[in-house]
Structures are given as structure tokens and as C-alpha cells.
Length: 264
Image (cartoon, rainbow, N blue to C red):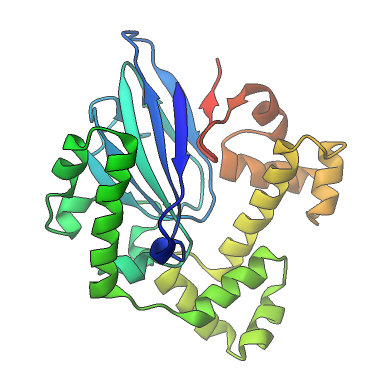
């Protein structure tokens, strides 16, 4: 299985983290299991072979779909040949690109053709290389920005503060806004409450320590990330990753961040 990554052109870097491609050529009928781990980040996926991937309800996914942030992990199965091209957005920017409220897309996905009338999926399909597919997507997003850009500076600054480990009262004080106003900003632009986003940031920070293999022990990770105790850390990890930290270490094969193949 091959994984590639391309960073966006300069005008889109405020909105898009990177474009990725995951590709496999196989005649095998054996299903592979993947887990989508919670990262608070929305995205978009194009499937060159739409029948390959199925969601956790065993439903076939659309050829081109937009998905919102998740508040818990999800399972996904795939078999045979596939070629997927995806977009990893920055949190809080979907309203700049699409006519929607991010909260309506939380834990959901939508066929892009139902949201934006376009021939985008056909254009991506006929683009031969990964680079050409990315160029098609970049052209589309630049057009979308001209239509929908509603950048909210306060939400972006709140995201930055929470990612730096600030508490919610500290964020409210820095922005000089009430708890209710902060929650309204987050639901509209990010799709989750500030408390949930802070939990996701802490989980992702713990996960990064585990990925780097420099954490000493899982107890040390729980302590560093200020979980109440080891049991609380494991419970949160299972909610967001779909497995305990030990099982993640032994079973997860992660090429695309937060989308590991689960080894049997």
C-alpha cells in the first residue's frame, strides 16, 4: 500500500493542511480493517474505485464526500484495489469553503454533489496523476473561497490556545467572551463544543507521544497529559481510537495519520 502527501499552494495553506493519496493494487478478497481516530479535523475524500471502501454500517461510500469532525472513532473496511485522494482541512474552516454549519456535519458525511453542484468528481477521475488531481482540487477550492469565505479570527485564536494546552477559562479570558458565546463559535465553525475539542486535543497530544516512542511508560503519558488517572486515560483513548493504548502500539499500522490499518 502506497501513501503520498502534497502540501497546498500558498493561498490555500490557511485552510488546507495537506492533500494525501492512499493506493493499493490487489486481487485479494480479504477485507482490511481501518480505524478512523478522532482528531477534530474535517476532510474530503475522492474514491477512484467507489466500491472498495465501506463505512461502519457496511454502506458503500459516495465517490466524493465531505466529512465533519468526529467525537468518537469509526471503523472502515476495504478489499481489493483502491485509490483514494483526500483533503485534510484545518479545524474551523469548513464555513469558509462550503455553505453549511459545521455542527450539522459532526460524525456525518455528505455526498459533495448534494452540497455543491459541480463536475468535480468527474474532473478528478480523469486527472491521471496525483499531482493533476491536486491541481483540480486546488482550482475548485480557490473558487469556493471567493463564494463563501467567512473567516472568524476569534475561533482560530481559540483553537490555537487550546492546542497549546490552555484551559477554557483562560481561552474565554483571552478572547474576552462568555462561555456561551465561545460554545456558539465552536459549534458553528468547528462542529464540537469547546470542552470536547479540548479533550480531543489532549488525546492527540498523548497519541503523538506514543507515536514518537519516547514516552517512557503509558502511565507517564497519562500523567504528562494530566488525566485524572490511568483508567481515565484508557477510557478516553478507547473512545477516540477504538482500542487501548497497548493495543494501538501492537496492532496499528499507521501511514496516513489517524487512519491506521488494524493488523489481525
